[in-house]
Image (cartoon, rainbow, N blue to C red; front, side, top):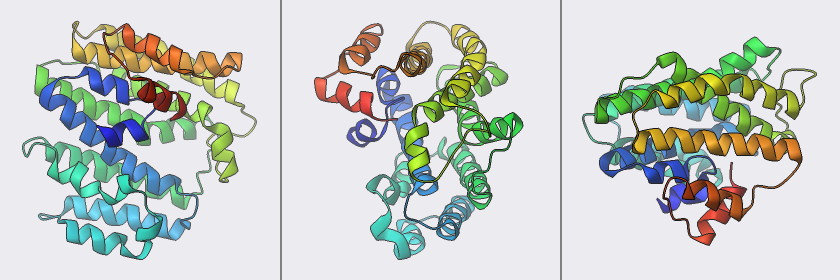
Length: 275
């Protein structure tokens, strides 16, 4: 949970609203995704190194046996460049998830790693909205589908898969808009030609109604609160972008209070800064 708090702006508080084994599983799954994201986004690794690492992780996840030594061997040439969350990928993906759930996560993570490698190879060239749809599906909507499967596994909740796609797409679009300036500094632009962060915000807003309907279809409880708080943070992010205001500690604390989550000041400040 400390690692999660230090790496996530959007998902730390919603995950804290979940209970028991589901919370631990979703936290581990998020961190495994974040570990791959750190490879994809790394400002110093050349593209050929990123694709080697991402496709290598995918192969390991599909093997009968995947050990920490296998990961160390894959990561060794670049170990000094990789952040702790990535170096601990085996812990997130293999050690922590329950044995009967882990293969579902491996399938999702392996597919994500391969899709990320394709986008690295392409130089993240997003030519139009169709490409943007493909990218947001690859790195976010697919995760929403996996989470929907976890809701069924742990709580017997069956949701709309298309709603899960919209949920992931809206959240990812808000994060792209929020991080646009930072992405440009490392030479990456996820916006189609001629688009601005405002256009990306409008794209996110188009998917929010379906994401809200998906959330509203879930019975009251921790899982619904997870989805609702995630979308509240997404909506607040878009409002902050539109108004040119920061996401401050008071705003984050207020959002969490709606769901009876008490947030220490240091946590609120971390969440306000992170993506």
